[in-house]
Image 1 (tube, helix red, strand yellow):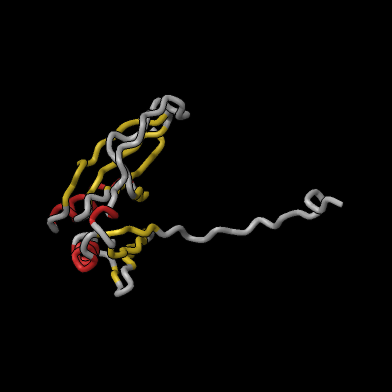
Image 2 (image 1 turned 135 degrees about the horizontal axis):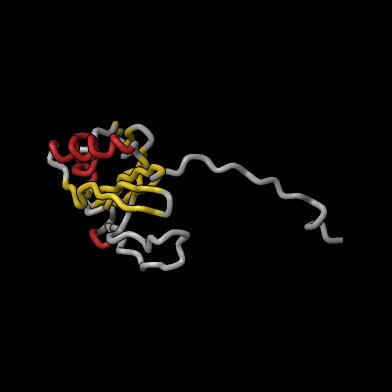
Length: 148
């Protein structure tokens, strides 16, 4: 008797996704996320600000610190966009007007702005992105969309 067809498998619910980031110097990264990004940072390495949460962990070796490389361009997206022009490690949705304020705030605190705010389109949507980088070069992309 085959019970596979007779028993429905209950679908479980996934919770919040938290990114874990290996860093070269845990104390330096905790300080950056606290002072530059204005996160609440605990001794466990949890760095939280509003809806953003990452866990910072000390890497065993510098070889283990690996920000994402640039992805391959694609021509099969549902819009004319072919993909980012730089590697993304974290993508954070922010309000359209908040994006400029956050970039200014981070810049004034000495944070590295890898890509100043820029706009483009995805079909009927207008997007605005900017990119900041943490001390290990992880790219944190701030992004917003609105109907164009």
